[in-house]
Image (cartoon, rainbow, N blue to C red; front, side):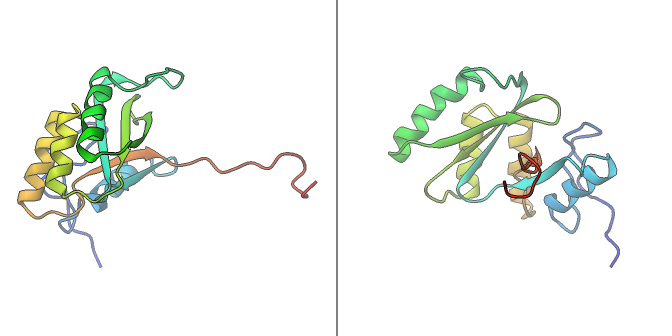
Length: 164
């Protein structure tokens, strides 16, 4: 089966070009983008689900060894989210492909996609990206919320690999 050309390409030619769809699915388009640009060996497409917020801070360079690696606004909004949900939220901070900051916020209950986009916007995630999520939702497109994330490195055995 031949895959049709991407439609709705809205981000232009930037490294995070996930504004298009293939067969109405952003994840298929994003995977093809990784493959065409030669990043598929080290990067993967990660799609959000009903218990995951995906924050993209394009204006915040990622530094691995900082005590507080996310932007200041993230921590203030996190406190509000935890009050609204009445539990402490787990999160992960990592580098984006462009060296900026991604944050995954893990929730203990499902949220609708509109509620997740609203919270992502409140956290200060890339406003153009969040607006495009809303546009995608209005068009009933699949998997609008996703990130390119580095693939986990394979575990290396210590010693000679013979179990000693």
